[in-house]
Length: 197
Image 1 (cartoon, helix red, strand yellow):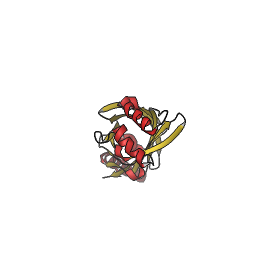
Image 2 (cartoon, helix red, strand yellow):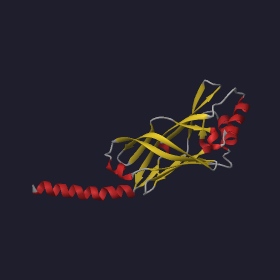
Image 3 (cartoon, rainbow, N blue to C red):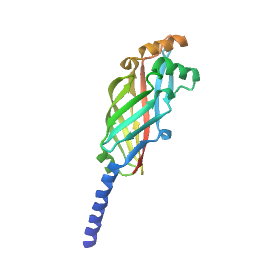
Image 4 (cartoon, rainbow, N blue to C red):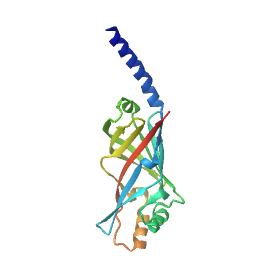
């Protein structure tokens, strides 16, 4: 009995020490292991997938999540189209970044075992061109040994009109000679945060 009691007390002390350390750990976004993609539709039925290749971010001690998207890193696999999106749509010379902010419960993460997953609704804000909009995403959170992965379960629909991008979309349509380009785009992400102390 004493042996069991001693083991229980030791385990409790270990967890008591572990959880605060986890909450106080620094979490940094791993760009190489993260993906932010969006789908555009042109000429009514032609859909294409694009990405942003440069992301950075962190999770603060209080659970505040911040992610920065370098808009000039837009990658459509066509160099001239990348340049047109940078100049005509995002105007990266004036507005180089988009930012995503949210808050997560670090206590919930601390309670997850390595390899465990949990689905949750994440409320976040997206800011671009000095405009901020609120969204809700259904995400799967997976805890690895020293990393945290968040993946969208369903795409998030973002409209050009919400950020004053409709003029840019029309300019792209005209220069490409297309009959239409959708102003609503589904966005998906998988982001990995590495844990450091």
